[in-house]
Length: 47
Image 1 (cartoon, helix red, strand yellow):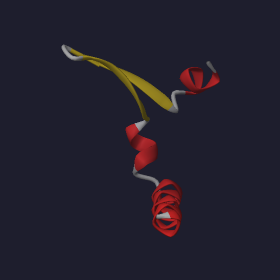
Image 2 (cartoon, helix red, strand yellow; image 1 turned 90 degrees about the vertical axis):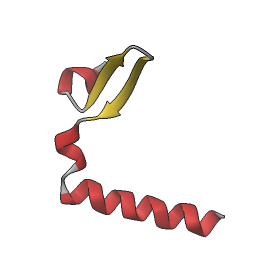
Image 3 (tube, rainbow, N blue to C red; image 1 turned 90 degrees about the horizontal axis):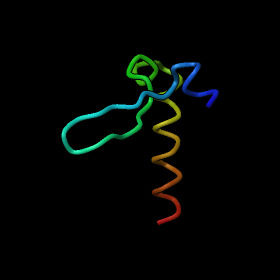
Image 4 (tube, one colour; image 1 turned 45 degrees about the horizontal axis):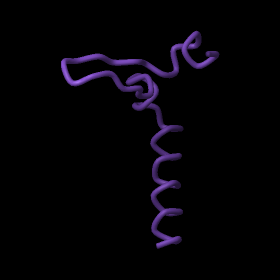
């Protein structure tokens, strides 16, 4: 509930249904991009 009020997560709708995704503005931040790279490295290390 807090995430929705803070607008960190958006709910999208189309003819196929609905889905949740992170705010597009946050996706562009350096901090988020760095986190994504770190997550990818962790996934590669566990495979």
